[in-house]
Length: 388
Image (cartoon, rainbow, N blue to C red; front, side):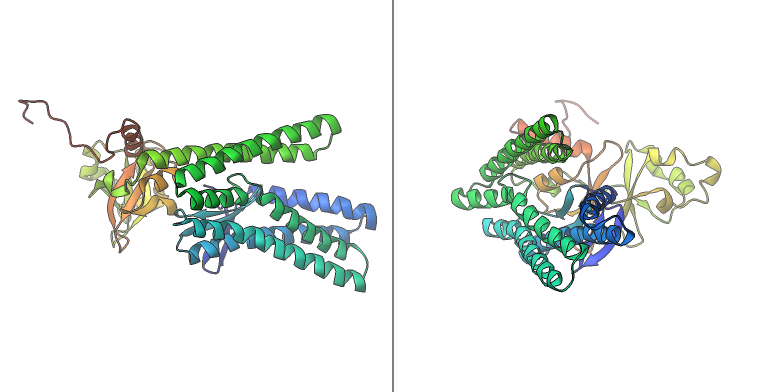
């Protein structure tokens, strides 16, 4: 999951943000387009401003592409967490998986179709503007149109996590009825595609000396790594089956009120437990953060009485707040928990805390499932003729 380090607000009710790496790509596209335009129209401030406008327009197009995925997903009953723009474009982070092959197919195709429409629109506008004026503006619009079309075609290559990989998964899923097999085929195709781009980029860099080879190698590495991740997630879903979060959660967990001071916490009964990380709750019992003992280590003893827990607690990411019926495999594949630092909070229909899941809980569930054992939290073993 990418963290949106630059919030951009909401579009159609969907949270939108940008990762800091998007600024690198924005600058790179401004430079590349600017160099191309200055070769034809001369080096001037206006030319570079038009190049910067084109780079911003490209990112707006990428946002449109991802919003098409997200809006379609939401209409098909799939939760959408956030849309994030980053170094290699954009990503829609979905809260769960599509419920059927038809939904999967429609969600996958929505983005490339939007890019094709945007590409055709920009090319048409470039023709109209070029008939009226000459100069860098119609050239920039033509570049935007062509780039959107190329992005649409590239995204339709049949390998996960590209949109074409999702299309392949949906088609295989619909034909065989086997979602695991479909996801595995799409992920393996993505690995082959990533490896091919790595080799092609390396050949271009060595034989032609073109810096574009580095970009192809970066794309290939990303596709290969992401496809490996999807392959692992598919295996995880297979092992965990229909298990739910409620099967492994700790009910009625110890929690820390957000309005406590750190001194209050250190005087409470919590310090006599062996727990290392705790959910932080508001006055209504809703989880708003997480707190580990290590979060308090840097706080001076003189500041404990005047520092509220909410000030030292770390905010909960959206994916760390789930309901008990959430599939365990979905959560395990989306959330990375650091031992003794992070937790997943389980909430009821009113958003109140009813349980927690730790990294140890997830690891134990995966290990038990790999051995063919039920993932349900086991009862504490008591040897025969032993009293507690």
